[in-house]
Length: 329
Image (cartoon, rainbow, N blue to C red; front, side):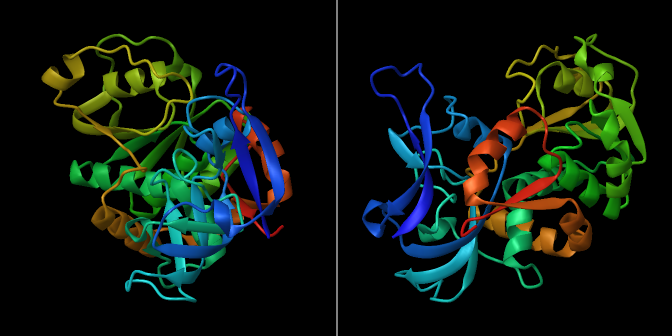
């Protein structure tokens, strides 16, 4: 028997919040089809997890599902010859906590194509600390590089998981980083990550003009809404803006002007359905380019029994950096 956090929808009222519970008596009979069975050691807490853990709609699409969009652990058994018992592996996204049981449990079974070996030099705890947030940040940095961006890069939602890792990566790669945050008490933290300039998020929160003064060579936006619109309107000629979040809003009120007059590129970042080859590239780059010591210093660890409450905290903006979930804790 093993434990897991289940999200149970109210089938009689689909608008009612889901019931979220830590189940103590689960067994392998509930595992979904897959080639690789994993003894899960760690997961992590992401904004999407907060939505699921607070019973809100939009993430979990099955009547009853184990939450957690990340997992890291040891292969227990595999019918796919790419993986063997005892191997360290991870899964990010791929439908975990949406249509497939996720990582907030001590056991998981998933298709082999979802599984990535934990890179040499990264511990299982560090892989969980990176998680979907760090993976998303790396995908954004790769898009910035493909766009040929050089110079100053804006990072919004800077004190969050994606923002924190993005700043650390960009700084180590030689970019100047402007961090946007509404948390005045996190300025020292952002400078430690490598931010050279910090601005109040209020500067970007109002509905922008079609074009604003050119400020940044590129931007990584994790919040959406008017913040993303402002980032686009103030990006320099030929710049690249990545969009990977919607914590502020799903809406984007902008115009074609930044695109046709300044040649700005807007690149969407989807970490759930990332092709396998790009997944492997992103994790290889994370192993090479991320300061793991800095990552550890910005990471907290909680047990599975504390995770439901932590979901409330991340939705309220009370968590900075990364949070690892020790599933046996």
